[in-house]
Length: 472
Image (cartoon, rainbow, N blue to C red):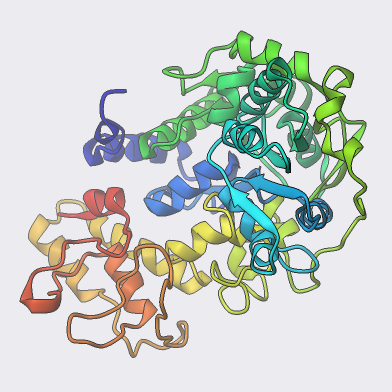
């Protein structure tokens, strides 16, 4: 891959959407339901407005592929307990700092005086341990097989150096068991999977063979650019229409069938499977997580420290579990976008950038009506057969959302940090309604910024691919 733009080309997207529409045929609304397992795919879909380019017969459902989102409240409480010990420097990735437990988050624990630090790599945590021999440094390890190899490398390095004040609180999980749990669940009917790309760079394509062989569902391992997602949907439809059911690899520029043998060997050296592990929304799943094996037990924080290790229920108002299983859309949660926002998260799905709730919130899908309105320009822009570009442009201008439009969200003022990349003013010193910001994302308006300078289209973190496809 030389340039990201090659995988965001509107002309190529138009061709793919046309092919997808032809394959889908005259099937009714929601006839094909595909789950994108990875949270990175969910982010791409809603950032670029891909769901509105597809025919109504195709519905995309988000799955449990966000590594931060699937961690239940119990391990978060254990982490806060460890961070509160006087001789401990507690380290973790930045996303985990804001995940709420039953008594606040790690960020709040830091505010109360605990020495909590976020790191970009577990090797950074090891360096902190080497630099602070009088302190115990604990690394909170989370993530799927994507991040587990970096933890394994760090542990082998710690063993080589003989660093006695370093330990790992291991909460790494594996991708196959939750997929099996979803397929066994009566709550959801699926027609296929958009397989996780990053995990597959490590584990390869072979672990997914049970999906077509046992459950009769096709799966396509996909990349993370808009054209990757569209092509994977086309490949799934092609399998269904041709009567095939197999594992296909769309992300062939990165993923190999055998995965990464060196990384897999390292995982086998350092970790072993846990008998069971609790997942948010999915409950306890057998052999779905990793722990340090006996050869690295000296670095196991669970053996070194006493922790509550309690099962803690989610807040009653939070429906992250149903969102992670794809049973409901984020806007169907009672607290989504009101009590629960990226600034004040109640559940994990609103914390991580890969969380479905955060993707819906940051890219304007605040309500069923507004989500539909994001895609309205794409519908209008298709126009009638033979309609000229000028007429389509006129139609787009006619459907611009007005602030007084009824039946939408109440106007709300945008406070500081009110969503990633959202304009906070209209160029005349006034706050803008989020509905107007939403529409500027979908149909770039040539608004003028402070000083009369023209504001670039899509300033509000908008759907560049959607804009390119719907523009006349």
